[in-house]
Length: 206
Image (tube, rainbow, N blue to C red; front, side, top):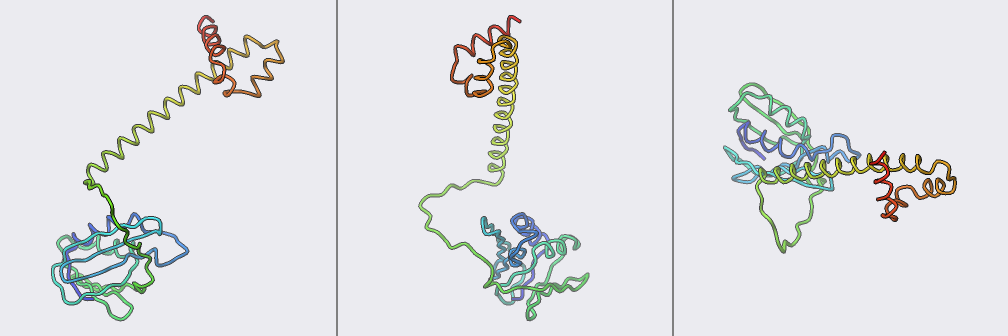
């Protein structure tokens, strides 16, 4: 493996995949990113064994292809701190990934690509294509819906607490009824809408 790529290209790809990489894992290989190079592109793959994400970047100069794995976080931190527009030279030297720029030389240990868990391709019967921008909007709408639902549940809980307090005021001398109330709680109220409505009416008058 021997190729050149711009800082912007590799940092963009690493930034996309870094979120899937496990920071602390019992399987060390999952802290790495799978690096695959062909004549025109660099492919990076990250996995936590439950999800997997891959990106492709255009390389600026190809000398030889191949694949390996390297620590994702270390690689990302190193590349993002390089000066803008830097053309980075990557090449394998035994079990080490060598990185050379005009400002310095770096050495990162690798692990065999054969040990990296890659999902087996599945037959795609149907698919949906959506831009990352639109997907982000959908997720944001989902978050808003969850927040609204949570607010409704909170208001309902407040109302039910109010109802229970009103029940206590109405039937404080009735031990039998209070026992039913305590035993049944919310379930009792939901199963007796007529009583519930009368309690609400009583509470509104008082």
